[in-house]
Length: 285
Ligand code: DO4
Ligand code: MG
Image (cartoon, rainbow, N blue to C red; front, side):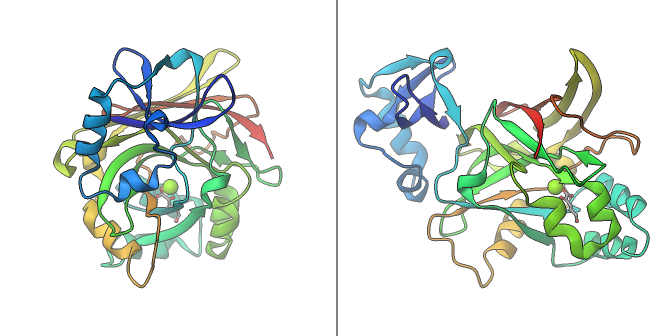
């Protein structure tokens, strides 16, 4: 079940269900105005299944604009959860290399604040690269959708856009490397109710196009994430309250070679096999 937010022809923001035959069932026609009440329900999947079988209006997916599937949820991110991420970051930085080594093995994971929900960009919108950074990359990540009780109710695709030169210069610059205008993309929808064991079978792929030519492609498996999802969620919710739940990116396992940086107008296409495709173009911000 693919839960989405979309803008219809009249520019009204609606909650919907994307179907396998490229339609969107308009759940807002049944009074569902926000994602939160669905995600907070004891059994969101059961409610959504029931709504899907009701006779609600449908629109062609091609006729709507999908929006980032986030309402009032803050976006947080885990880091250094894949071996590839640990080694890439140790190479990019000299004096903070040991921090990455230590956090990969430590009991407490790296978790950082990524974005306010209203700043997240959706499918087809521009993701940003900082004008004061020289080395910018996308980070294709599986995102956990958590309700206010810290329960994982769904998954979506995240892009944790990052400035590697700023991050590598000094660990204390991490918030500037990670959180800036258009630095977080989510979408295209939330897939509800997948157990962790099944999500760990999913593949994550990225392809970056420049002037119609592929300039980077990479692939990893969700199963390579070192930590369990409930472990990451439990740390995020320690001494924290999220009345509307939260989104937690689970880290990147794909890092382009060191000579690669994004350019303005590059097209970043991220695919997670159990979810779909999140595509964005790059803009200098
Ligand atoms: O500590 C740096 C950020 C790590 C990160 O974002 C990742 O591994 O995905
Ligand atoms: Mg990341």
